[in-house]
Amino acid sequence: MPGIDGLRGLAVLAVVIYHFFGNFMRGGYLGVDVFFVISGFLITSLLVRERATTGKINVGEFWLRRLRRIVPAALFVLFIGTIAAGFIGGDSAVHLNFQFLGALLFVSNWTQLADANSYFTDAGVRVFAHYWSLAIEEQFYLIWPLLLILLSKLKIKPKQLRMIVVGGALASFLWMVINYDPKVDPTRVYYGTDTHAFGLLLGAALALWLTSDSPNVDADTWPEFHKRRILRRIGLSLAAMLVLPGLIALLFILPDTSAWTYRGGLLLASLLATSVLYFLVRGVLPMKQFFEMRPLRWLGRISYSLYLWHWPIVVLLRELTHSIKLFHTPLLGLLALAISLPLAHWSFKYIETPIHRRGYRACLRSALGSGAPILRRLGTVVAAVGIIAALIVSIPHAPQRTKLEQDLETINAAKSAAQKAEEAQQAELGKREMPTGDKISAIGDSVMLASTGALQQQFPGIYVDGAVSRHYQAAPAIIDEMKANGTLDPFVVLGFGTNGASSGAHPGLLDEVLDDVGPDRVIVLVLPYGDRYWMPEAEAEVLAAAKARDNVYVADWCHAAKSHPENLREDAIHPTPEGATMYATAVKNALEDWKAGKHNTVGACGV
Image (cartoon, rainbow, N blue to C red; front, side, top):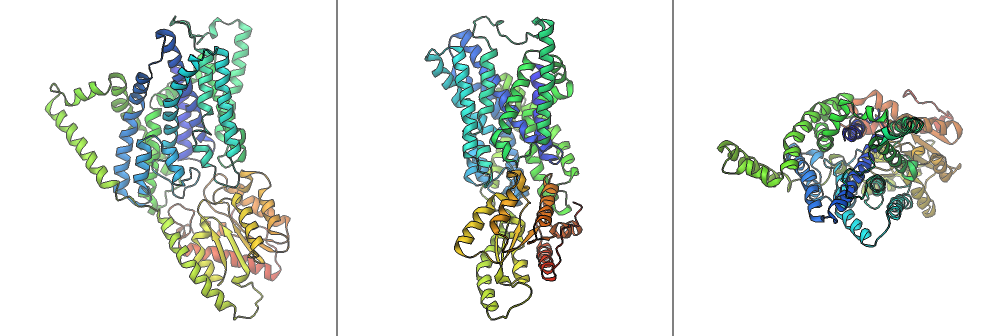
């Protein structure tokens, strides 16, 4: 149906905008859940119709059709992307061997979880991170027809079958809720096939409802809008006009950092997508006209190839342009879009379509058969040999850590020995008005970790506990452990916000953290900096906490970083050594405010 292509177009547009211009569409990642619903619906419809017309489901033939549809473009992008990442090198090639294997076997979601790779932070991002959704779909395609055959052999009535599938969707969602921990990164519940299968199952349930199991090929209950009475049509149209704006609104407002996203938001998006699909296949107006617009239909036709290409393109462009600070600018997104769209169109026309329509053997005969022109045969062989050779060269030499991780590892290696020596030296010093390093505990994210050396130089003996991808959610456990061990010092520096505002996890989290530290300690909150949609909220909550509490002071890292972008790394977030000195100075200035009795609650970063 043309309208389903249009819905695919909306889904891929949301994902691309989320990855290229994240601040504009913070919920664009929900486009993947729309894809899940569409896939579950179409696949189940095909299986039901096959069983109705032939009396059985040919699982082998089904899997072959899926391989013909999914594998060619996926492998082509995987091969070309691997070669490009291998030759460009840098962060884009990190764990390339592990990524390649996971994507090749369609278990990328699990290999990325094993690699502790987060979908929601830029630190350690992988060039094939987006293959996680393909992995979930392929795993569903592997298992679902077998389950459908089993359920049909049990002579379960259609209504009961639909209820079982809806129950499975609900179970998957509840498993996500149970496993979601607001104190840790949510990638496990987002990537897990077990916790993120509800969209596929809701689409399957819709197919079981709308697709007839009659041998009559014209017996489906799809589109029948025109058969309805006028009042019924008006009612359906009004409902459709509420559902579609609701889904589009979620694409703009539902952040990936919110606890509500994993406690109902993803399910709501899937339910809305299922409703949109219902109205669409029923031919409800004006839903039908909206999704049959040519631009959306064109995007829908190339949506699979566009999804495959867009992420490697932007990751590789970031690596190539980091020296000119394009990392998170709209210009980088526009450049990535200008490259991705033609590649997707070419891939759809020359990779996807021929193999999907003609099959592997026919395409191979066309390229290598005796009837093929000699230049085509020669070119095909040379290209194949070249790709294999390039893969052999690229994969084994992939680095195992990003540049940031390497720098932070060096810092960590030196931290313990240097800290012990500095603590011994400080033990001989008398009391000072400014707190000495041995009276300061600093806890934070990778920005703080990258500033460890500068903090130790500014405050010899300071305890620094920074980590990559750390969110406010991790703070309570760290603080409780330090209090239990008696190692939480009288002065506590908290540097979070790079990976999301505290309220993104759950409202009141920052207050809980500050209460946990206690009113008897002086707390310095680092005002975070970065080009992320949540940053204004993260900055505002720091300033609000300082205004509300007499023992909370602000270290204005935001103003320092914004004033000197040349002292930031290519991601425009983490500091260079010069930037780390600015970070430490911001903390020092906050403590000097405390020393002078000044309670500064205003940041100079435009919040």
